[in-house]
Image (cartoon, rainbow, N blue to C red; front, side, top):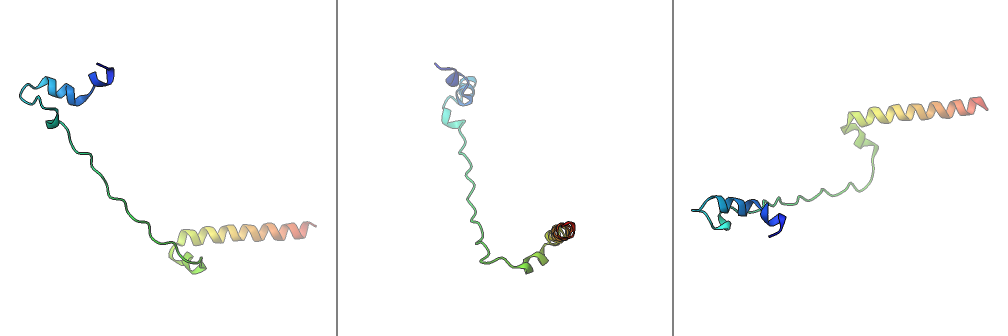
Length: 78
């Protein structure tokens, strides 16, 4: 008998109860969760999509402002 067979919970429970010696009594079916389908991707990117998400609009504005600032400073420093 291997170690895995000795530590099998089904066999341990079956050995400890004489009335329920059948190992099928202790088995439970494995629950299977159904797979969900992913929504279809948006066909094209639109700036109007940012209006639905104020956080994305804020981050885009902040990053855009920093990019313009860096570009202007790069032109002025030359």
